[in-house]
Amino acid sequence: MAAPSFGLSARSTLAVLERGLTLYRRLWRASVFGSFVLPVLFLVSIGIGVGGHIGQVGGVSYLAWIVPGVMASTAFQMAVGECTYPILGDFKWTRGFHAMRATPVGVGDMVCGHLLYILIRVEIAVVVFLGVTALFGTLHSPWALVTPLVCALVTLAVAAPTMAFAASIDHDSYFALLFRFVMIPATLFSGVFFPVGQLPGPVRPLAYVSPLWHGVELNRAATLGAAPPWPAAAHLGYLLAFTAAGMAWALHAFGRRLQD
Image 1 (cartoon, rainbow, N blue to C red):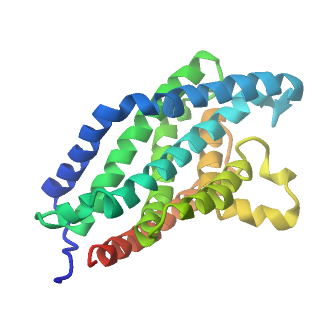
Image 2: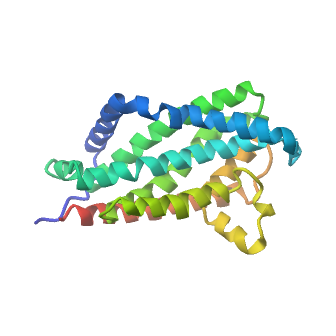
Image 3: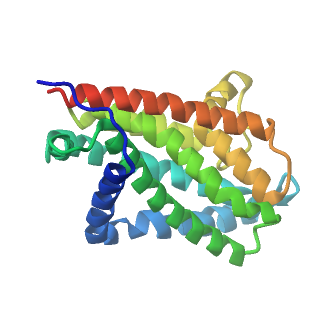
C-alpha cells in the first residue's frame, strides 16, 4: 500500500476542523459538566472552602492564587481527554482517519485540524472560566487577558504528544496508565493546588518537566501581576519545544498507523 501523504493545506485542515465541530455540535451536552461546571466547582469547593482555612499564599488570598492553576489544568485535562479515545476510535473503531486518507486530506491536515478543534473547545471553556473568576475579584492585573493564549500553548504542548500516543497503541487499556501515572500526578504536582517549592527537593524536577507547571506559573504571573519563577521566555520556549516535539511524534505516528 502506498505511503500516506504528509501534505498540509488550509482547505483540507479546515475540512478536518469542520468534521470535529460537526460531531461536537451533536455531542456538546455530554461535555458541559467537565468543561464548564467542574472548574467552577473546584473554584468554590477548594478555592473558597479550603482557602478559608489556609488564608493567604504569596500575599494574596488562596482563591486568587489557585484560579490560574485551575484554569491551566482545565486546558490540560481537556486536551488529554480529546486526544485519547477520540483518536484511537478514529483509527480502530470508526476508521475515520483511514476514510480521510482516501481523500486529498494529508496526515498534516489530520493532526492540525484536530488540534484546531481542541483549541476552539479549550478557548471557549477558558474564556468562560476567566469571566466567572473576574466576578469573584481574583484577577489582580490586566495581564490576565493573556491567560487564554497561555492555555492555548499548554493545550498544544499536551495534545500533540497525547495524539501520538493514542495513534501508537492498539488497546484502550493503555489510557488507564496514562491517566494514573501521567495526568493525575501532573495535576497534583504542577503547582495547581500548592507551591512547588513545598515539594521535597528531589521531587521538584518532576514538576519542572511538566508543561502544565510552566502554564500554571505563566497564568499566575499574569493574573497576579507578579514575575514568574523562571523568565517568561524560558517558560514559553519550553512549551513551544514540547509542542514541536509532540507534533513531530504525532505526524510520524499517524503516518505509520495509516499504513495498516
